[in-house]
Length: 136
Image 1 (tube, rainbow, N blue to C red):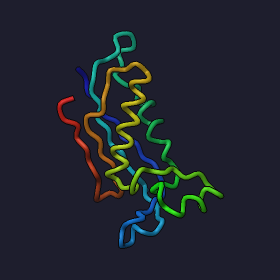
Image 2: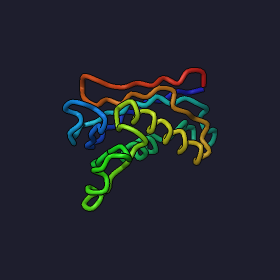
Image 3: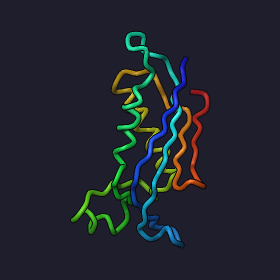
Image 4: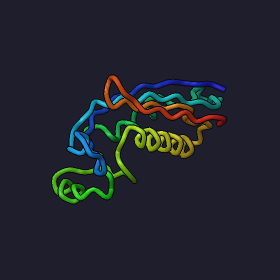
């Protein structure tokens, strides 16, 4: 068993459709994602997961607009810019779950025996959401 860590940054905007407060307005963040992955190192390459694979998977959010798929702004903004829609509010909590799922799916597609064991998505320098996957 081996564990690796990777940190990736991206810039993206979002808004929270069902939130009462500042975050109901479209605004941007410099997001930071920290990922821990664990599994069995590939015997041929000696690598658990290529760090570039992690970076590329996360950077699909870079310079994008993230909106709840039910947000009425989606149709208007898509006229001018692509929108990544989420199955709920695009919070740091939801992004952590979506990114972990994408990384696990990518590893499966590549035939790698690796899984996300912990992920943190920082919305700002002073706050983050963390998911720890126990007993994998």
